[in-house]
Amino acid sequence: MARAHLDILYRGPLASCNYACPYCPFAKRRDSRETLRRDADQLARFVDWAGGQTRRTLGILFTPWGEALIRPAYRAAMASLSRMPHVRRVAAQTNLSWPTGWLAECDPDRIAFWCTFHPGETPLDRFLGRCADLDARGIGYSVGIVGKREHLPALAALRRALRPEIYLWVNAYRDEGPNHYGPDDLALIRSIDPLFDINRAGIRSRGRACATGESVVSVDGDGEVRRCHVVPARLGNLYDPDFDDALTPRPCPLAQCRCHIGYAHMPHLGFRGLFGAGLLERALPPPFGAGAASGTGAPG
Image 1 (tube, one colour):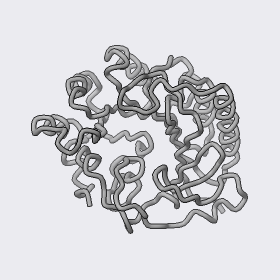
Image 2 (cartoon, one colour):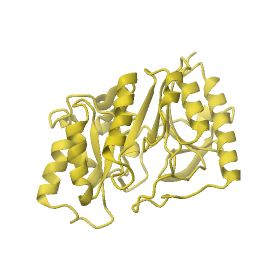
Image 3 (cartoon, one colour):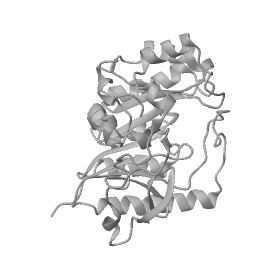
C-alpha cells in the first residue's frame, strides 16, 4: 500500500554565506573544508534515500543556515530530485546570487525557489535579472525581503518591477522592538503583503494542531528528525527502518510560533489551501490581495 505524502525541511551543517547582511548571524561565515565535505556526503545520502521512497510522494525544502546554491553539490541534488517522478516539489531558500545555467538540467515543473532580496548586498537590477531567468524557464518562485524600515524603498521598487503574479512577502524585523514601524510603513507593507501581520504578531500556538511531526518534518544532515526547526525534541532518524512509526499527529508545544515555515502547517490558518502547490516555496498564487487572505483568520 502506498504511503502518504511527506514534506521534508532539510538543513545540513552548511552555515557559510557569500553575503554580509548585518542582521544575519551567518553573514560572510566560512565553513571549513571538512564541514563542506561532510555536508556534501550527508546531502548525497539524503538524495539516495529520497530516490528510494517510491511508495510515497515527497516535497523537499532546503532551508540552509547560509547560502547553499553557491555549492555545486546542492545544485546537483536539486536537479536530481526534480527528475524523480515521486518528488512533487524540490525548493530552496536562497539569495539568488548564483549563475543559473544549471537549471537547464532540472524539471521546471518540480523545482522552485524561496528568494530573498538583500538590498545592501546586490543591485536590484542584478537580482531582477535572476528572476527574469526563472520566468523564462517557467520556474516558480516567491520573493521576499527582511522588513527593516530602510528596506522599504527597495520593497516598493521590487513590487513595481516584479511580474504582478509573483508574491512579494515581508519578514517582520523585530530587533528594534514593537515600535519599529510607523503607520505609513505598515500601510505600505500591508498593501504589498496581505499576510504580513501574521508574521509580525506570530501565532499563539500551544495546543494547536500542526502538521509538523506528522506529514511535515525537519531533518538535519545526520538524518535526525524533529517536528520543526524550533522544537528541539528528537522524533527519530530518517534512515531508521521504522522511521514512519514516529509520524503521528501532535499539538504544538510552543507558546508562540513566529516562523513562517512553522505556522504555515497549522490547519486553522488555511495556508495549505491558500498557497496550494506553492506552499514549500512560499509562493502565494494570485490574486493575493486582502480578499485572498481572508480565509486565514486573525493571529490567534
